[in-house]
Structure formats: C-alpha cells, structure tokens
Image (cartoon, rainbow, N blue to C red; front, top):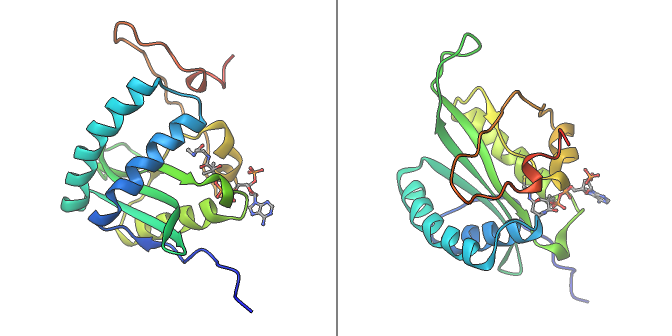
Length: 172
Ligand SMILES: CC(C)(COP(=O)(O)OP(=O)(O)OC[C@H]1O[C@@H](n2cnc3c(N)ncnc32)[C@H](O)[C@@H]1OP(=O)(O)O)[C@@H](O)C(=O)NCCC(=O)NCCS
C-alpha cells in the first residue's frame, strides 16, 4: 500500500525557489482577478530581479511547503524600512506577502501553517510589528491569527492606473 503524499513542513527558501515565488505571485494576482496579461508579465520580470537581490541579502525570507517535490504553498517575509513611532522605535517592520496555496491544496491549513512559521521567524529576527495586505479570501485567516485592520489609506497618482476593486472593498 502506498502512503498518501502529505505536504512537507515549511522550509526556508533558497535562490532555487525564486521561480516558485514569482509563479505564485502571478497566480495570486490572477486568482484575485487583478492585472492584465501584459501587466502580470511586467510585474513578474521586475519582481524576479528584486526578489533575487532580496534573497541574496537576506532582506526577504521565504518559506515553502512541498509535496512530492512540487511547491504547493509559499509565503514571503520582507524586512521593510519604516519610521519610528511612539509605539515602537524600531525603523524596520515585517511585511508578509505573496501568500499562495495551489488550488488543489486549499482549505487544509497550509497558509495558516506558513503564516505561523513566518511569524515565528519574524519573532526570531526581533521584529515587533508585522503588516500585510489581505485579499478578501484571506481576511478571515489573518484575523484569526490576531491581525487587525489599520488606518492605512492610499492616493493613486499614476496616470492611467485603474483602482482595483480589492483596494476599496472595505468602504464601498
Ligand atoms: C488565501 C489562501 C492563501 C488560503 O490558503 P489555504 O492554504 O487554503 O489557507 P488555510 O487552509 O490555512 O485557510 C483557508 C480556510 O480553510 C479553512 N480550513 C483550514 N483547514 C481546514 C480543514 N481541514 N477543513 C476545512 N477547512 C479548513 C480555514 O479555517 C480557512 O477558512 P476561512 O476561509 O473561512 O477563513 C489561498 O486561498 C490562495 O492562495 N488564494 C489566492 C491568493 C490569495 O488570496 N492570497 C492571499 C494574499 S493576502
């Protein structure tokens, strides 16, 4: 009898996982119905270069879960420059992003396990605040983990930028 394959425990990404994170970023935005084919292609090219540098310098850490040698879920944690406030004098915060689970493996707790692992990593790195932008689909997941909405607002200034519906869902 062959055992049913199970996703591995989250492991730290290496440069060899670069294409997984790029592919998961494209798939994430497609699932959120954001971006044209051309926009996604331009994003992927630019993100590949940026993430390669971040993985080399350690400014961004990734976590991946695999099954039968294939990445089925991943997340990225960026050490993001910020500004000291009375709440914390630290000028760096964690930014959790690129959270993605392939459709065949959803609703099995993979994103929750990855987020937990990323938060543990953030604690080990000494980060005091972790921020993220939640898709509609992931809001419940993050709220259960203790994330709360913040006062962030945004002004879109680029000519020709069409505001995605995901950016304004809370107030419409
Ligand atoms: C959002 C996303 C990352 C969630 O990934 P996931 O691995 O399915 O997440 P989890 O399994 O940890 O949790 C998802 C839901 O499944 C539920 N769940 C977890 N294990 C379960 C189980 N064994 N049985 C039934 N439900 C389960 C969770 O409670 C959660 O419920 P909710 O949607 O009501 O909050 C995934 O759907 C995805 O990649 N979506 C497209 C991209 C995206 O939106 N990314 C997030 C950007 S912020």
